[in-house]
Each structure stands twice: as C-alpha cells, then as structure tokens.
Image: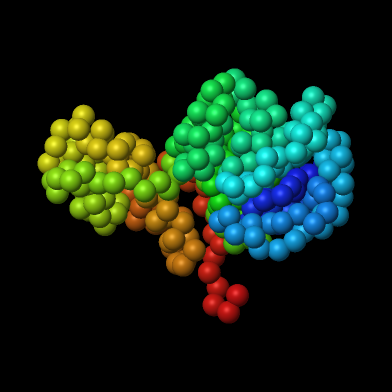
Length: 320
C-alpha cells in the first residue's frame, strides 16, 4: 500500500497538517480497501498553530525518521514566526527525495522544501502573501504566486490554506482517476478538482477611475451566460478596445475574459447539476455552451469528471 508521511515540527499549521490526513485516509478502492496508509511523523509535544496562534500540543504516532521511507511525504505550512525547522527534518526530506519519493508542500511548507534544496531550479508556489519572501530568500526557485498549485513532477507545491485540499485532490485524481477522486470529494464536501493554474483568490485593488472597474461587465456576463458572448461583445460592454479589456481582466481578475467566461459557465453548470433535474443537454444550453459535446469536454477539463458523474456525486437531496 502507498504510504503517505505527513511531517510535524514546532509551529506547524494545524489545518495544513490535517488536510492530507483527511484526504488520503478517505480514498478507497471500489471494493472498499484503503488506497493510502497515512503516518504522521515527527517529535513528541509539537505545538500546532492557526494564524500564528498556538492551538494545542501534538503527539505524532510515528518518529520523524519513518518519513524517509514513505512513498509520498507532505510538508504542511508553518507559522511565520515559528522556530527554524530542524536540520534533521531537512535531511529526512533529502533522503526521501533521493529514494524517489513524491514530495508535497502546503502553503508555507514550500519554505521547508526550499531550505532542503528541493525547489532549486523548479517552479513552485506558496501563499501569495509570502511569495515575494520565498523568491527573495531562495533566488534559485521560480516562484509563481498566481496559481493554486504546481505539479513539477516529483515535487509539488500548493498555495495557502484551502489550496492544500486542491493539491491533495489532484494527487488522488492523478493516482487513481476521476471516480475515486469524486468519491473522496463527496466525503470531504468539495469540488472534485480545481485546475492548478487557476488564480489564487488575491485581493486586487480596482483602478480609481469608475469607468475602468469591470464589476458591471462581470455582472452582465454572469447574467447572460446563455448568450454566445464574444471578446468583442465583452469589450463593447466595457466601453473599451479588445486589447484594453484583456489588460483590465488580467489586472482585476487574474485571467483573460474568455477564460473567466468559461469558468463562470462551468460554475453555473455545477450549480444546475446540483439543484435541478435538467437533462445535461439543457444544462449545456442554459450555460451558453455551443453543443452538448463541447459542454462535456469543457466541463471534464475543469471539474475532472463528466457532468453526469458530477451530478451523481453532488446532487442535492433534501434530508441528505
């Protein structure tokens, strides 16, 4: 069985620590057999934190050294003012990586991977508030603060807090496919898969000028998702050129107009699949997809499963 070791150390973020335990322990084969063995590894009496505040003391079930022999090692985030991670933690990570283990970090856990030298020459991410510090402290790391997670092969990193869920779900999806991922997602009550390239939810100040604020255009697009909107239509509503509207969308939403529109259409489709009995073809029509085939392809690309499988996993049932 695939062993997942989740590391603990002084100042570890409690939420980040619990996420991989929850996700990987929830994954089961169709017959019910567990797919991962999860081991929390570290020293006794570790103080876990939330937003830098001490929460409780931990007593891991396994010694730190066990992580060196795991198939996957997960490094949770740590409080900004936490003590420097002990050299033995870095050595365990290097040993595991040399053995070929898959290494994951959640949020500021990327700083631990960087300190171990595992991010040198690699693209990586972390919480957007800490991205500049990571890039400044470790110039050999290609820091991308725009995304939810980065899958760089053997080493994977995620952005802050909930993005750790997305990364762990991505790993389950990659290891065992959409059916198992959908079952895990239902258990932890989240969408089966968000794209790693999706922008982090970073607060971006709108321009001072009212006529440069895209919020009216975003509301209009959300209300008219069923229409065959073009880039020219969007620029016309925003009272600007195609080139300018592209620039404004990048500045204010972190993505392009047409990609924002696609994401909005898929999100609306998810809502309709969850709360209505509309046939899939009618959902495609209501959400502005040109054909049911296009809808199924686009939905699967973003959600990771087909519309029918999504409905089976997330259909709202009163009293459920």
